[in-house]
Length: 254
Ligand SMILES: NC(=O)c1ccc[n+]([C@@H]2O[C@H](COP(=O)([O-])OP(=O)(O)OC[C@H]3O[C@@H](n4cnc5c(N)ncnc54)[C@H](OP(=O)(O)O)[C@@H]3O)[C@@H](O)[C@H]2O)c1
Image 1 (cartoon, rainbow, N blue to C red):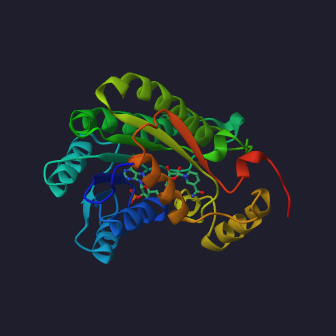
Image 2: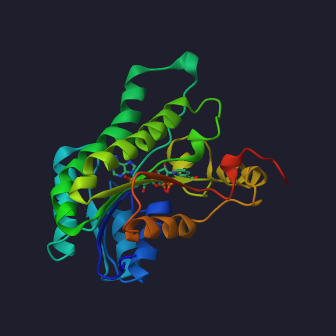
């Protein structure tokens, strides 16, 4: 396993939730982490609270110039290097099958699939110099089928498939690729999507605990631990790592 200390890592969507948890965990271990997000106040506050190991860059992953700026900021913060790209930024997209709207579906794929594909493409020249890694944030939505969530679940199925093929293609360049499939972690994702109030969202996460074999939802840190593993593990590529407390097993034990 290579050392995480001094690795230069770009985490998109690092201003909240799982991305913030990854930034905190990786910086605590000595990595130089650059986080991005559209809300300047969020990313800047997280970077400031972490300290000099973390740098914020404001931007939208669906905008080409912003992707370039994110990468440039990460390479600069990493003193000319990039060892890891964590494609974490993403949104929840729910719509009933009978209500599909083309624009909504295109937005879901633009943010959750196409933007991370294009950012990964930009990052390859840097990652091949460092034998680095590209990670995608998938979801346990590809193991458990939730009615109403087809737009979101299909974007997550796309990145899971993408990670395998990208791993096959980039292996010769010594760039590893992986996908993390988190179970439920209480973040702002459903509130930001306008699906729930904060109280409803908390109640929803509480109710999901019993569907996890281990009887509880997870934490951003527990996802970050898996991110760290995949960034460090030098003979692991093309995997989909379920970090889900057993949600994907389909039990209802508690
Ligand atoms: N929470 C869960 O239970 C769970 C489970 C499985 C998978 N996931 C996945 O984990 C990832 C992180 O989600 P989370 O739960 O931590 O939710 P979150 O707190 O809402 O984090 C998502 C972050 O992505 C950023 N973002 C969204 N669209 C963006 C864009 N176009 N450009 C740049 N940044 C963008 C958001 O910041 P701005 O709005 O400021 O841009 C936000 O900080 C997502 O890919 C999600 O699908 C979450």
